[in-house]
Image (cartoon, rainbow, N blue to C red; front, side, top):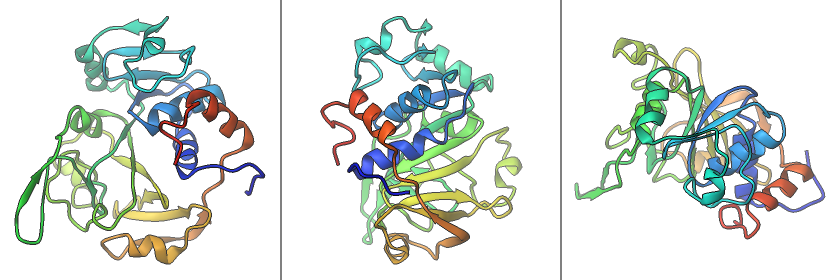
Length: 257
């Protein structure tokens, strides 16, 4: 639905991320856009959602002032629990985390993510930052949501290395290898929103952002991307969502583009 206020592509992605969060869920909050997505969801349709941050911060309220990173002082102020990374990761192991957000340098058709290393056409390797806690999130949260830029060099048929497992080789792969729960549910990109076929576990384009053409998405995807027969346009952020995002990110540090 069109609105009469301008918005950036990042604000649209944050709004889409926030809509993936349901009330009463425990969300392992990631950096950048997911950080704002949690605040937006909690302020609107998920007031009872709880945020878990990798540093060991657990919040059941919105930080009183804007934050750029999870470790900013307003995010510590009157937090529900101020623990450490070990405690936060233990919540994952106990199956208490409903959803988490993950990004990556590469993603493939089954939602496997690579943040470890890539190889160019001549076989030369480039080292990447690695997992951090992303492998734990991908294995142990009830579901995970991927947020990343939609570029052909990132959306590849097979990732060079699996840092954070998605649906592996598709079908029943996760159960077959003993991953007890979870899997990617949604991929929010700069061009659209994708989900996964419940049988094949292959990525499926379900909505395109306003102003983006289907051929743009297909051209920036490194395999023959499946398209939902019910393909729609991603809803634009509402005026209320834009106003809140300007409050949470007043200088447009994360959402200015």
